[in-house]
Amino acid sequence: MSKPVRVRFAPSPTGPLHIGGVRTALFNYLFAKKHNGVFYLRVEDTDQTRFVPGAEAYIMEALDWLGIAPDETVGKNEKFGPYRQSDRKEIYKQYADELIASGWAYYAFDSAEKLDELRKTAEAKGQTFIYNHSVRDTLDNSLTVSREEAAQRIANGEAYVVRFKTPVNETLYLHDIIRGDIKFETNLLDDKVLFKGDGMPTYHLANIVDDHLMKTSHVIRGEEWLPSMPLHVLLYKAFGWEAPEFAHLPLILKPIGNGKLSKRDGDKMGFPVFPLEWKTEESTSMGYRENGFFPEAVVNFLALLGWNDGTEQEIFSLEELVQKFDLARVNKSGAKFDPEKNKWFNHQYLQKQSDTSLATAFEKVLADKGISTTLDVTRIVSLNKERANFVNDLWDLTDYFFVAPTNYDEKALKNWKEDTSGLMQQLIAVLEGISDFTSSNIETVVKEWLTVNEIGMGKVMQPFRLSLVGKMMGPHLFDIVEIIGKQETIQRIQKAINTI
Image 1 (spheres, one colour):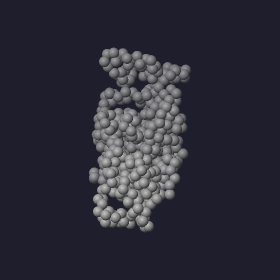
Image 2 (image 1 turned 135 degrees about the vertical axis):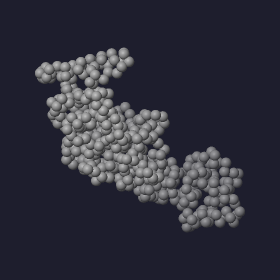
Image 3 (image 1 turned 120 degrees about the horizontal axis):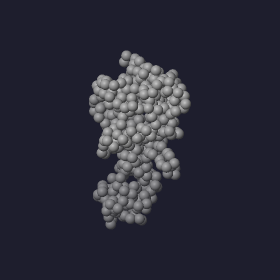
Image 4 (image 1 turned 90 degrees about the horizontal axis):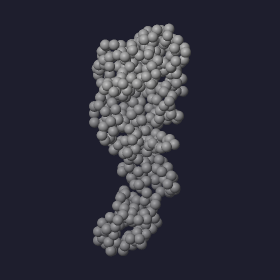
C-alpha cells in the first residue's frame, strides 16, 4: 500500500443494523487489520428526519458483540473528530462555498412543486426528468440569474439548495477493486444536491469531505452505492484532492427468489437479519444474539457470503480471516443467504465450546424454566451437544433428565408387549441389587442378567429407554441411568408399568 490504510464503516442511525451492513463493517475491519491499518466508524446522521433514537448505540453494541469494534469512533480515539456528522455541520458550508466559487456548483431556487410538475410533464411524454446539463440553463438557479440577484435572494431568506455542476460530454474511466474498470458518461448523470438551505449537507458532500479530512484510503461499501461513484470521483477532482480506492461489495440476496435480503424475508422464514434484537412499540425484530448464535459463527458465516480464500476451508477464526482476506477474492455477483448454512456454522462453533462453558449457558436456560437440579449438567451437555445447533436446543434434547416423562411416544408403545411389565419388574429387582451404580457396571450387570435368562436385548432395552425418556431418543441408555440415579430410574420404570 502506498499510503497508510484507513477504512471506515459509515452507517446512518435510522434503525437496527441490517446484516448486509454488518458484512460491510466486517470486510472493512478485515481489510484494515490485514494491512495494519485503522478501521473507524463515522455516524452519518445528516438526514435528521430519519434519525431513530437508540440506533447509534445499537450499532456500537452490535459491533462490540461481534468482536469487530472500531479503532476510532464517537467518544473513542477521536483523532479526526467529531465522528458524528451532525457535530461537523459547521465544516461543510465552507466546502459548498468553495465549489460555488470555483464553478463546480451553483445555487438552485426551484421549488419542490415546480420540480414535481416538470417530472409529471416528462412522464406524460414517456420521458424521465433529470436535473442536469440538458435543463439547468432554463431553470431557476444561479446559472440563469446574476450573482448579485442570487446573493440577494439568499439574503432575503429564500429557500435554496447547492447543486453539483456535472461536466458535459465527458467519459469517466474509473476502477473498482472488485469490479474492475467501469465507464460512465457524464451526460447521463444528474446535478445532485450537495447542500441544503437548512445548513445541512447531503450524503454526497458530507461523505466526500469527511473521507478526505479523515484520510480514508479505501472506500469499501455496498454495490447500491456504485451509481454514486462518478459523482464522488468528480467531487474529489473539483476539490483537487486525491480520491481513495473504491470497492463495491455484492448484495446479500434472498434465500428464495430474487432481490436483496430484507427483514420481511427473515420474518417469513424465521431467521434474524439483525445482529441484536430490536424493539419498537409496534413490534420486536429477531436478533442473532438473542436467537442463540455465537458471534464468532456469525462473523465466519458472513465472511463467506461473497468471499472465499480459494480453498475448501469453511471454518475460520477471526485471526485467520484477517490473515487470508483479500478484496480481489470478493465476488462480483450477489451471495444468496442460506438460513440452514447459517445454523450449520453455529453448530460447528457450539461443538468447539467447552462442556463447562456450555453447561454454564444451559444452566441459565434451566433457571428460566424454574428448574433447580443437582444432576451433572456438564455431563448431560457433553452427551447431547452433538445434536444441538444452539444452547436452547439442549432443553428439547435433555428435558427428560430433569422432568420425568408423563406420557409416552405412541409409535414406541408397540415395543411394550404382554410380557413387558413382568420383565420390567424383574429389571427393577436387578437394578436394586447394584451397588456400583456407574454406567459401565450397570450395563455389565443388566446384560449378564439378559444372557443368563436368555432374554432378547430388544425386549428389555427399548421399553427401558421408553420408561426413562418417554420416547426412543437420547444418548447411551446406561449413561442416562447413571446420571438420574438408582431411585429415579426405578421410580420411572414403575410409573411406566403402572401407566402403560
